[in-house]
Length: 467
Image 1 (cartoon, rainbow, N blue to C red):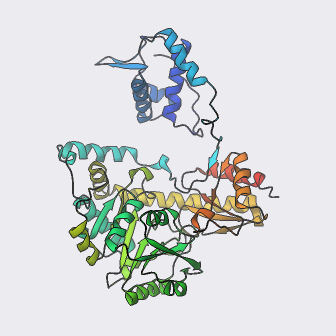
Image 2 (image 1 turned 45 degrees about the vertical axis):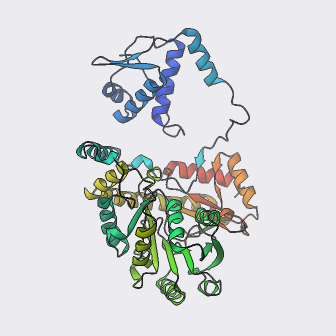
Image 3 (image 1 turned 60 degrees about the vertical axis):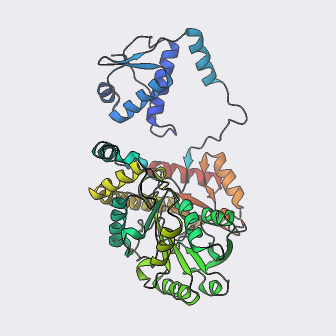
């Protein structure tokens, strides 16, 4: 067997399969691996390096795709013969210094709130259900599907949201789409262009952007201790309100039942709608889960929106909305010409994943994992940053806000952190006018290990000159 013993770093920002494929390419370039030599089998190399077979297979597939390796039927993988001059030019190009446009900041720790823990994703089970979708379906998924989304998946979503969030609906009320922004576009068409949308301030900036790009009238409503300020909402002239009651984004307020009922009364009094975005309602660290607004609604005034981005993986791009009866009728009358935006294969895979119980098991596992990470995150902040920071919105979700008591501006906090290789995020982008009166930044922890969290917080302590 060819001696392949690379130094693979789990903390490296590059995936392990990329590190392995790059190592093999360098060995080929240097002549240490000769043209025509046979690569070890996936199983042998996996055992030798202590890696998964999937990692080895992906690295080999990368080498085949780039033309360094060829697969010979029933024999194995062999190094292809390359012209010496071309090989030399190729690797010289890969080693050349980056131009000014290509240079990027060397980020060691990234507190991105949109990332999740992909290391604990059940790859083998997802692969198993994907294969089932492909072969048991006999090609039916290659045709166009229902504009609302696959009925079987909508049935599973209806059961799950009722059991976990108290959402009362039928599968016929559910519309699946590739992300909240896509669904908000459809929803704004359904509701009409003569409505005024009230948005939390601060609030989810991507929704505000969609509505403004569509030419919808928007108004920003500040928060109080219970969430969106109901008195200001009443006097705003709005007839639709977009809220994140289970975990206000980005501040983290959990809207109490009294404020939820006030919102429903407001919607009824003006014949308007409440859009409830339950973007990470699965993750709560103190107390019992709060029931959804939609579950309290008996007059059909609430549109419930959910996503699998935080609870599964962001790239799957599967979100859904539950429309009240009047809006689902409008949808069927006016929007069935809009094609479904989510791959039928992914929809069917997720349906099988949920039906077989894998989804609930994965969710339970991730709840435990994130609760542990959250506890470690809070302890680490207390240990290294002491009383020099105030933590906001720490009771649920995969992010929190740090208010730093050093009178620095948001930009100073972000820039000095970046100089130490740590990326933190602005809070100001979530305000309508971009203001941020406090020395505050947003930190996500879902995609980081405990070791990375500890290193990151210590680097922030250094960057922000906290004693």
